[in-house]
Image (cartoon, rainbow, N blue to C red):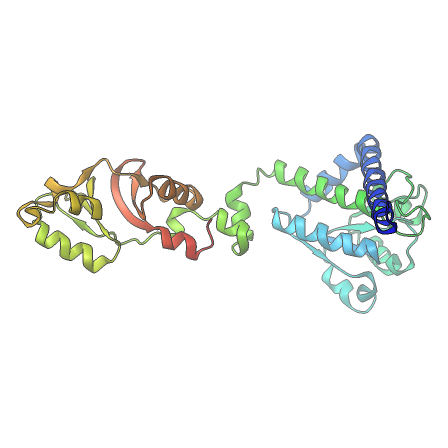
Length: 324
């Protein structure tokens, strides 16, 4: 066995030990979670303002993530750095807000001004700390005590297990709030219009072209071809006077009726009961249908498979929006 191999095995063993130890810390947190967690959720639900999250050092980094998770799941939140709070940012905290203060020791000196501000103006305070009887937990309206677990670094000086527990606790609070508010994927999309998440939650109505190329069943194919070419989708819908869908003419229909095509009407050439989608359907589902059926367009109707034509969706519309 080479020295390099031995070294790599040691690295792997360290990684597994750290992850196992942090997983054990989460198990301890699960067991320790008690009434104070439910009280914290209720306190936040009753707030008329924002959730202000603060912490120093590694707790501050965790706090920023928790604030972002709250904000994206329907609970208005912001992170306020405790050092900046002492130099004017206390003005960001107002009546109706709730403060969530993170400190493993519960004695972080930089939090003192914000803690005093919350007491002075009667702003509810949720304290999260790992030391029972600490200043933060004594002063908090709701005190959440993290279980005493060893840090995964082995020396007890690097925040590892403690920050993992704090992060998981923040996620648990966010999801409890989200479920109580019945936060739906549609709400989630409102806060995530960009990126992959936003794209996957787009609806057909967000991407479709409202003016679909349509002709009547009695329209001569010579005219239907002009409408089809002008629109540029490679298809033309066939609908009644009330826009009720009757069929669709595609490139395949043209090839099947090539002989004497111009002597036919659109109704004679069309494919009946074509694949359709609705404005409320997820764009990712419409894209999957187009891929499955090897087609490039779907007419958008008021009802699945029938109803009035409301638009048309091209596969390129989905790809441009990042739906995949």
